Image 1: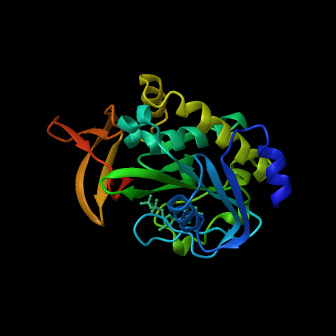
Image 2 (image 1 turned 135 degrees about the vertical axis):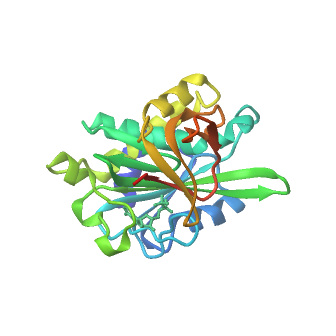
Amino acid sequence: MNESSLKKTLSKLNIGGLRYFPSLGSTNDEALAWAASDAKDLSLVIADEQTQGRGRLDRKWFTPKDSALAFSLILRPTAPLRPHLSRTVGLAALSIADACLKHGLVPQIKWPNDILLHGKKAAGILIETVWSGEDVDSLVIGIGVNVSRTSVPPMEMLKFPATSIEDELGKEPPAREELLHDIVSAFIAWRERMGTDELVNAWEEKLAFRGEQVQALDGGASTVTGSVQGLESDGSLRLVDEHGKSVTVRFGDVSLRPAA
Ligand code: ADP
């Protein structure tokens, strides 16, 4: 991966700008700083390796050299998009899922922010916001995809099983540039439909654990156990608890686990 191969691959997509780094702390940190200055809508920060890749809270995201996709897209919301910004994580998840489907994989979305292949985590999303007073100035959408086998973290780093596209395909994975192109292209197309039911329905259709019992964990303490029913129109998760009562789980630092 290098700057000219990336520019070439992305040339037909209308991105706002590109910053490539062979090695970087975190693409989200770089994108947050760029967004706070003069980044245009759909600017992209990408690194071959992240040395301080982040998940939610202070969790680490593993991105070794030459093996993964790690990038952040900067989104400058227009007025029509503003009422739908809570769907951004779904927009990103669907874009990764579409790219996986194109390459013969069967992705599922582990609400809110992970993509599973055969029940194992192959990609994650981290969304961060640049505020302007009480308004959203821009959103930074960080995406990490395990492409080669060597991108899968060692077991002791994991609370949830992980895999890679190479492992699931059982053969040479597509080039990272090509996958990046497919994800960004799907993102641009889905963003046009951000306010539609179509987006929420497609997102819901790909939810992992539908009809199964899960625990929604909030910082380690079990908050609610129930079966996964679907999504509310803002992208919140709808569960039905053991008393048959419908419970809405909002975003925040919630992690889903299959219930024991
Ligand atoms: P979760 O969704 O598991 O609640 P996050 O979305 O914040 O957590 O992701 C961070 C966690 O993902 C880390 O604590 C680690 O267990 C796991 N992880 C880190 N790097 C990778 C990777 N490349 N692939 C799969 N899982 C990873």
